[in-house]
Length: 327
Image (cartoon, rainbow, N blue to C red):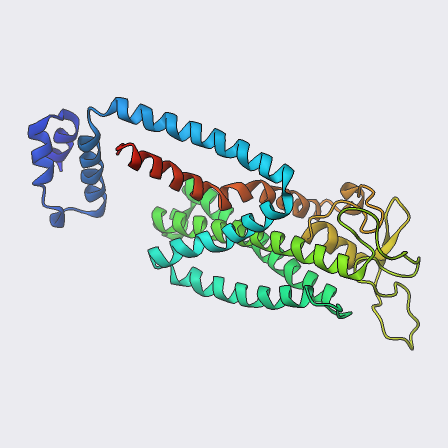
């Protein structure tokens, strides 16, 4: 391999010919990677001006795309959210089929099938009494699984960086692939379920009538009714209904504890479902072990741009480079 190293350092036309003549079959995977790396440098040698132009195109496209997305989100939030949700749902599917990630494809199909059924139930009119609880239970389950998966993936990556994988005789590349895969699964499905849950929460609350995204509610809220699920808060032993703890917001409206937590964490709503007064999440989640769930939700919201729009922007940059003849 010494000859390859000398070629990589030396450069020149003769060195490039030597790189092309190297027999890859006799090299280890690490040595093959080094040869490919050297060939890439040889191919792009002397193209510094072209590379600088490509970098400028990338920066300009990112800035313009960000400005357009912000304006779109402010002026037409509903269409922006729907297109973003579609992007997050479909774009990874393209790479999955192209790169033959069959395990991800199976999980994606299972998630899509159950979520499609839950979404169908949430958008029906009239709304069944059991639907809101079904919707929040499903998306809360996915939220917790994605949270745990992301934490495990992050820990696996950190353990690999600190070399702790060697204690279990695991190769660094295998440990890193495992950690990054789990981290991706957790973040991707975490972002996807929160957007589906927000859409379902809007549909259900509007159907029940105690919530309106813009304007006044279409129904008057009684003190004995939960505005999230539309069912009685307090029921007699002989009556049919939900028996669980209640939670009173600072605006004095009372809800089932599970309903209001699902509304705030899963449905991404931080206002009262009836009067739209700001909800104090720190007061609601006084237990310090519950606060990371809130921070994780905020992280998922921030990562939505990377999951949904970054591949599209990169594809647009590559298209511009292709049109301009840049390589």
